[in-house]
Image (spheres, rainbow, N blue to C red):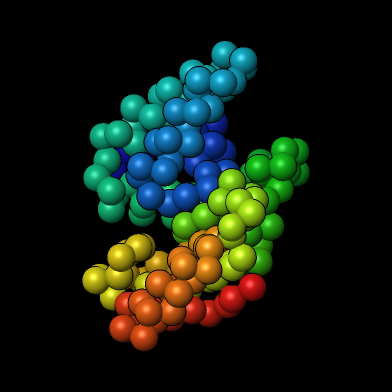
Length: 158
């Protein structure tokens, strides 16, 4: 298993997703757009470490940090505040669309669902995942079909 620096742990603590691909994409965007050279160096080193891990090892590492890491100071950024609130509430992290995902603002989108993936045969998500999606009427109809086939269980619809 790899060892993370304090700065790398803080970065992982604030990640949105737990999947290797999502984490690497999020950190790569940070590398590209940050003007803070120290933060960019931390992000580039973290990218190298995460790329060496398998999907399962990476997910385990990210989940462990997000569950057990504690900031050495009071949360100062929005990302830190959200991560601390999520950790303190014990809320299960949702995969799929982020609460501010662009899909949410599409005029055709009329539904938001939170669901559990029950089967490895589900067309979206991994078995055991809890997901959020913003859907059109057609997308919601497909979600209901997947629920009938017991691939998913819709927990919340709004």
